Image (cartoon, rainbow, N blue to C red; front, side, top):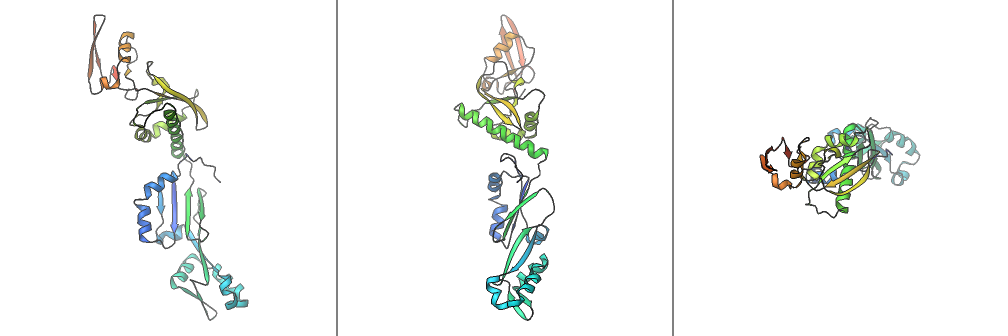
Length: 295
């Protein structure tokens, strides 16, 4: 109904369970929580405690017409009006008591009444559904603020990167550098990356995508392609890891750096080199970096 992309996270999923066992609640709040959040692409899962149910749902009662037909006869219409007009608190009290008195008759809350939970919390951001039995209600916070949209765009970029890695025949452990190029004047992807650096670093062994302008001129492209991210077309490139050099260094020094592998300079504070009789001392973090990302 809201037409939300599957890659856009859901801010919160709230669940109301009627009389859940302690084991079910503990599992949903414990070992299963991470799995549920991952499967639903949600940021938060809330299992509403019983004392807060009234803030989220309304319990309604209706007669079990099949069972009560003969018992109530012509009184059925009045009884229906009576039970359907009960407040949430009265309906809960009736179920807890187990019965309801009506015109000198005792109505069993277990067999002669049908009870259902229905979502009733105010707010246009909510979409909800319930089981046919009315014993489980699930509500989704459909808020689409900038943080949510940014996370969705990040997932779109991550998917594009994974597709390129697959096309390039890379294994999970193969490390690459990722660059992207947006349409002129746009910074949708740049904003999404900067707001979700940790997600990219976790997914790609510490490597965070960068604008293409930061790629060394000697960067070796393994695969490239286009992707629709945030409604615009973005060029995405995966490249072999490469040492990055300071802008303005001589062509000879830059060429020397282009011949090095990141492993050659990792952990070194400086590099001593001699080109055409001229000696150079290059400092890590000033003249060169182990990667474009470090630069």
